Image (cartoon, rainbow, N blue to C red; front, top):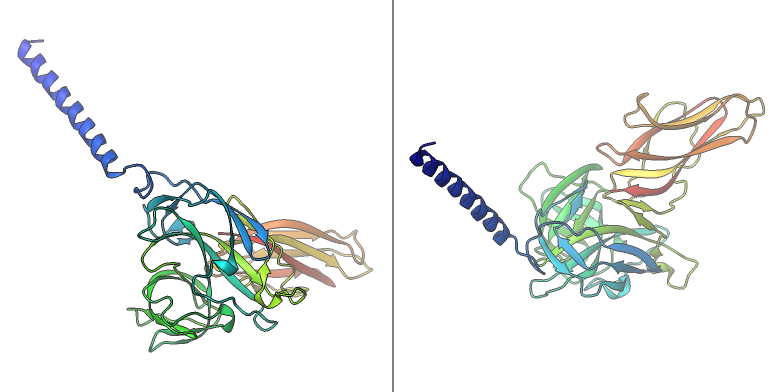
Length: 359
């Protein structure tokens, strides 16, 4: 190869190498390491365990503060990484209300869903845990975009949530994922900053305010406070026992739909038996024969009231009165937190036990 040609090729290779190294250096400089730096990777959700009637224990060293989580995605991609002030600490709902009062639960309003957040205010160099109640809509004024929430939420100072982000979990029972701002609030309701004239909330819908108007935050988990009249502090509720495992929450919620006997598909609404952010349900399907003459029996679940069965259980014709069969199931929701169920066979009853959810 002529000397000039070799010189040209060598120069081109050197220029390409220098350009590549400059690009790598630029990318690294835009994502520095250390507390408060923009995240290169998500250190994950810290471990949370039950630690008392209204207390949790959190194990974690660092946390990526990237907003709300909805259907597996966070609302603030990127975010900042902060260390926890304590890597192993307990947090009590009563002491972490930050301006809220304890809710007063009753037979009429027996439960309150609560979100757990990691939070770092602008002047803080570490993260801590903060609890926020899900707001369940009691009524909604379309003209003012003002919602009134159920009275078991707790009291707080006027404009307690003013200026904060709010995640609309559901609109008319259908998943929403709108991210809005709270314009103002009173002890009875919230006024939303909404540009869409078609926007409307219905009784039973949920919204979730952010835990801070100016700081960084990350949604971690949902817990549930249940009315417990048998204990001295029953009116303030206690955590329903729970276990978190790989995005699943195991928490026994019993048989909310009673005995199912309809041979046609009927809608069963899981809305208030799983987290407002749940995308699926965990549980057990059971079916029982109520006849001494024997026969077959079955219980099926589907998404849309058709025969597209996603979970089922059955017993065959050799069984007699009282015989039954149970199987565990996990089913994802569609646009709503509901499924359709039907029983197969005469003198048959079916039951759906809710044991947890997936977010």
